[in-house]
Length: 189
Image 1 (cartoon, rainbow, N blue to C red):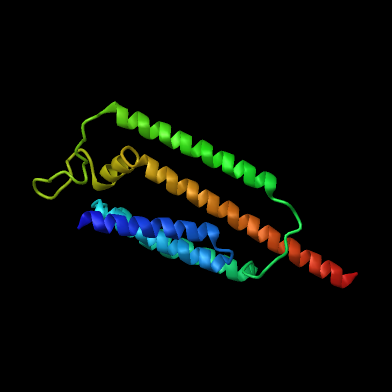
Image 2 (tube, rainbow, N blue to C red):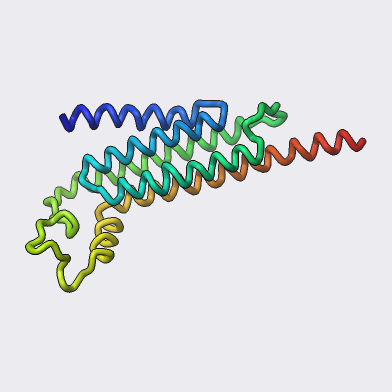
């Protein structure tokens, strides 16, 4: 049953991510982002990472995406605009950076697989004797240790995606404002 859930929600994550990139309408892209984030939260639940799944839904799927939708609606970037510049060089750079990122991730994954370390017991998933964290370490410290050691690549991937989203929203806002300036300038002339 776990494999079926994994494959269904992995497919939903991939289709949501493709929808974010391929939809031309920004609102549809934001809704695809919500679907992808909720599917990722289900995958976190499957790995018994309940706190991370709840944070994924509460912070990212709801708050961040609603913020994106408000920005889209307020700036009016959901309207069609004509492009007067060519983005061929930007696309080439984006493809090259994507290939570089995949090579880097493959190198890191290959290095970790070849290390052959035995799986360690995590402080948060280790069976507790009396339901209390060890005396020398509280819950916050144990969570931080797990997040920033074992799940560091997931944390870094999320931070990179947030930076990309912020840069994309700034680009969309600038493009929208330059179109408004051109329209008002033409009306004054």
